[in-house]
Image 1 (cartoon, helix red, strand yellow):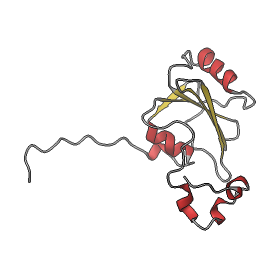
Image 2 (tube, one colour; image 1 turned 60 degrees about the vertical axis):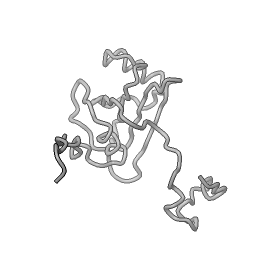
Image 3 (spheres, one colour; image 1 turned 90 degrees about the vertical axis):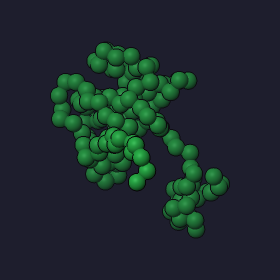
Image 4 (spheres, helix red, strand yellow; image 1 turned 90 degrees about the horizontal axis):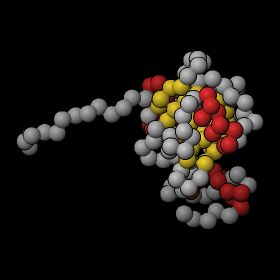
Length: 145
């Protein structure tokens, strides 16, 4: 990845002469690859950090916050979410606030909703994750056509 110096620090990456190519090959922050995702459907106190959310996972969901599952929480305002997960070396906290719009969220009930990794990516982009479906399994051909 190229060093963009002050352009990145000052939040002007789009003004840099390489345009969208600046983001090519950039390191990804947050969970990647095949993951298990649990979404808490009720809003939580967003003053909570990683330890407070991990305690909610244990106490409210009855789950182990150190099992590799990504737990997703939202604030009362649906424009903010936090993810807490164990990456094998420590507890990670990922937070995002949409500048425009709201995150699509399951109906507010007591409980959790499971998402696929593709649905999580759609959720993080502010898209309607309910429209993302798993790939269909297609039988391999038995002979060349």
